[in-house]
Figure 1 (cartoon, chains in turn green, brown):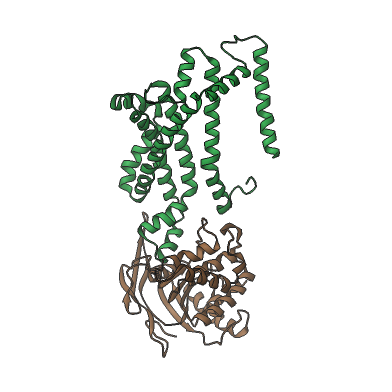
Figure 2 (cartoon, each protein chain N blue to C red; figure 1 turned 90 degrees about the vertical axis):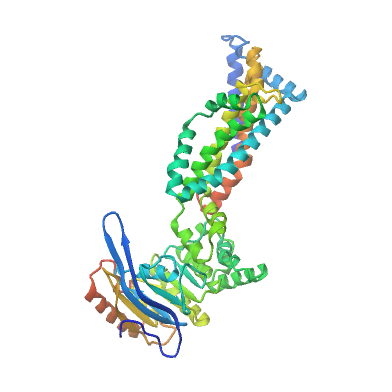
Amino acid sequence: MRRLAVALLFFAGLILLWDLAVRSGRWSAVLLPSPAYVAEYIWAALLDGTLLESTWVTLKRLLVGYAAGVLIGLPLGLLTSTSQLLEDTVGALALGLQTLPSVCWVPLALVWFGQTEGAMLFVVIMGTVWSVIIATDHGARNIPPIYARAARTMGSEGFHQWTRVILPASLPFLVSGMKQGWAFAWRSLMAAEIYVTILTGFGLGHLLHYGRELNAMDQVIGIMIVIVVIGLLADRLLFAPWERFLHVRWGTNVKSS
Amino acid sequence: MSTGPEVAAGAPAKLVIENVTKWFSSTRAVVQALDNVSLSVAEGEFVCLVGPSGCGKSTLLDIIAGLTKPDSGRVLADGTVVQGPGRQRLVMFQESALFPWLDAFGNVMFGLKLRPDLTNRERKKIAEYYLDLVGLGKFKHAHVHELSGGMKQRVALARALAPDPQVLLMDEPFGALDAMTRDQLYDDIQRIWMESRKTIIFVTHNVREAACLGDRVVLMSPSPGRIAEIFEIPLPRPRDINSPELAGYASQIAAALKGISNGPDMEVASE
């Protein structure tokens, strides 16, 4: 409760500073709209449904692309961890492509898929899959060998060993890799949405883009705030439960839990 | 005292180790870990392997477990050649090797879930029975990191016993524990052994521990690993690690050990 109060107070203070800056009159009200205006925009966009619709469009792309990225990346990461050959080939490829900023996939996606949902999905998957491969590979390689030995003597092998020993044992690495994959997917999708107009659905990135075109800074800042809030919520809902599980079971970071 | 294959009178050989040789090669050197080692272990026998580090005792245990393949020679369990690990021969390691993503109960259940012949209710009953047996019935849902070193090894013991293996292989299971916890575990392991009559191979570098637990103590010599001498310990059980008779045997083994090496890690006296 106390932590929540402190956080609320902090953000209230930030908004107050922002408001004071606007009131000082040093900057044009067009370039720096007051917090009240931005709140008004968010409220209006909520009421007329544009915000919810765009959020839904964006989240759908993100979740589908992310899920596909994880489904592709997880087995590939496990595979590369088993053989030196795959590590030197697929692993090296993943490492290389992971360093490529995911927005760099957008031109290619446009040429290959046109202005379609497919292009969006492609960009999100490319943003996700490489970091998931690397994290899974890293996790599986860093398991204390004694776990696998103990499991083998108890008769665990093959698929059972993968799902009951290697995956859970690499969970600490997996969760941080998934989190990184999520962050990359989120960034790449925003870049793609700002960059490309797709008629099958306007996402948050499009709203941001049109806000700039219309010089509507209240819209630009409002959407930015929405994007931040969604990012925070995703972290709380998707990853916090896993991290709590890790802390409790592995006994790490006990104080803060 | 003798070397080579030998079977205790009256019982059939549970494990037969025949001319096992193992080499290890690293980038720097090729080392012979085991040289033509042969040993027979009777059903229900408690055999301790002692020796200085580098004598290949842990390697021999791995080979019996099926985790490592010998370069030549073979291991027979119940007359069948060991090809790989199997739940008839479970291993307990020096580090508990408990899985941190499972609680104590989940760890004991792990091996049981791999036995398709049991129903879930039977598995739970067995897991609870063995947790009680090692005195941790109340810590069923404890997380691994919440357990002390001794408690972890008790859970590991319950986990190894629960699938009802015929042979229990223990690789310095008490090496990392304090002396008081160890003394308690000596009593427990003897009690459990007398009740369950498992065949146990126990690797240690503590001579007194070996004399306390083993029907026979197999002394190994290093580089390359060979069986140097085998001692029979005919003392009645349960044995007290601090008894003078036991100390007599221990010093006899310690003297033989000194003859083969002056390894710095040998605990000749009990702490």
